[in-house]
Image (tube, rainbow, N blue to C red; front, side, top):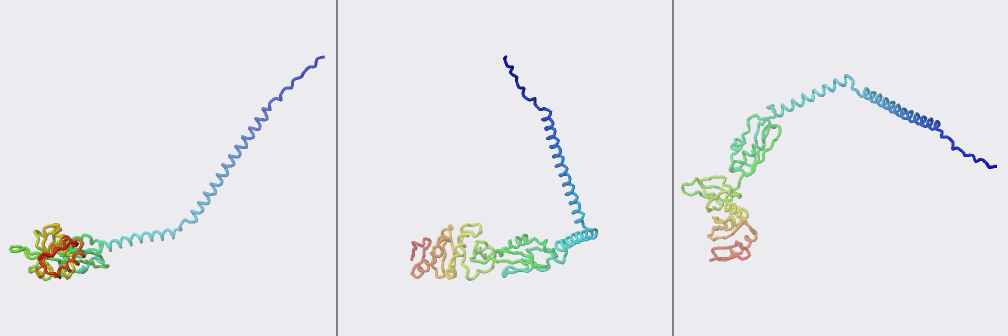
Length: 287
């Protein structure tokens, strides 16, 4: 008898159980998300209540608010009063102008040139403009203007120092003083003693020859400068001067001053008429 083979059928999928499990997971997820939202809402509410409580706690009382307003008002009034006092009131206005350093330049002329309006408040006095006006005066080299509170302006000047002069000759307008920068700053009636005379084609601060000559005079040793009577030059490198004893010195340009002065001092101990130190390494004496 032939046995009959029975086939086992695979168990049917438990679709119902899987669906129920999926639904359970979904419900758990929704509950978890909903719990998180509720937690955030409760936290936010607590934070809001805490912030409102802190704001109520820090809110100034009516008395404090009134005091603050009064302080603000008094601050504004004080600043306005201070601004008026500094910029418009006569209490802190210019009452005195002190001039320092003026010897040959007239103090009254300096004050007039400064042109400070009477009673002008100190802070409205334009010290830069005052300085520029005074600096235009011929005898003034430098100017410094400052405020000395409460009511004084100080003007400190450095006058120009003459280093030489030139005579405009017959029909001219007199004898002119020249400073170390070649500036012609003053006219006098007589030749000043102790200053060398410039004999140049022209004398001007814009003239290179004038500047070269005054530069040489500015670096000459004092003893040699006192002996110098006249100075001439045709170019900036051909400065030449005559001493009180009639000797002529060919100096050249304004370079190597110390070397030239030492060489010239040695040469002047020898007989001669023209002493050339324009090239101090190769000095010459001409009889």
